[in-house]
Picture 1 (cartoon, one colour):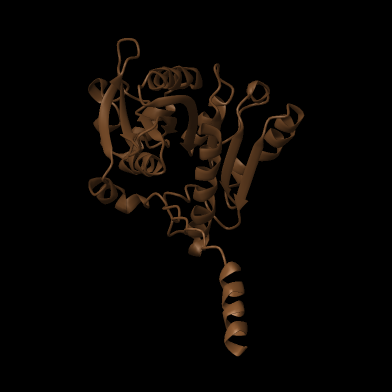
Picture 2: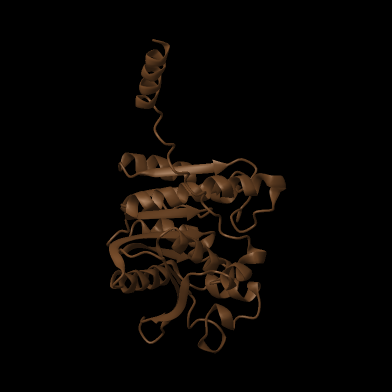
Length: 278
């Protein structure tokens, strides 16, 4: 009798065995800070290459990194800071490729530097800044549009695109949301919002990340929120307390606030891009 009861209990327990735990999701890896960007690029297993994108008589020197996947992928155009196309921006492109996107990072001052060069022809960050400041919003938009048109024809692209920009490039990424045809998504890292006329042309969903200690840029957030809400355009703006301008590149700054902002903003960015470019 006891043996029969024990057998029944064993049968019942096996029929109600718990489901296996879901596989753990790999954590999203941050782009490296500025001082380790080149080392990260040198050890990357992904395929990155320089290409010249046609643009009038001046080709746009562009860094392209491909993801390791069998199916077609969405394209993310990476718009550099006011310092031009640096190793850090290229490392951001590499991390985007690691997340499954085709990352395309143009040197938007190609042909404007000394001797007709681009960022690599300037002797210092200050020199690069001077050249970038000479690039008008209209000319910048035309160059971004040329890169987007080129990327749309890549055999491995799935037909969907986004822009992401940092600092000066953050503002240009926001402006790209008002372009025709609009990208499927735009990400803004501590870049100013478009002016009152251009904001009315924004059609793409936008995600913005801002340092709490960045009053000049942050002053443009609320007006953009009001305008885009009226137009029923999605705008998710995250302000990270204590973080400063450039927090994703300067992750060790602000007594940990920059790192906190980086750790929160980057996974949000990747999730947003994956939802729009799949």
